[in-house]
Image 1 (cartoon, helix red, strand yellow):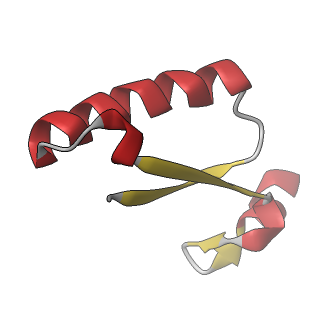
Image 2 (cartoon, rainbow, N blue to C red; image 1 turned 30 degrees about the horizontal axis):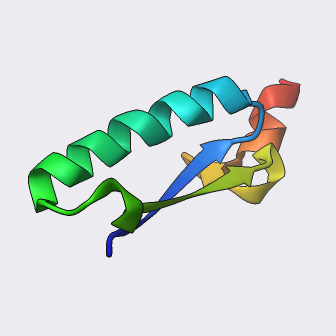
Length: 64
């Protein structure tokens, strides 16, 4: 059973997540040869203050 975690910045719509789940499930089903009901996809919505890039918290970059 494949377990996939997708980490994205908060703000993605349920429709966007649904589309990604459908596409990823199809890809895993084809690549791994497993049934769709065996594919689990989890979303972790990140706030800008929860990650850094290029030596700076993203929340500080957005303020500039």
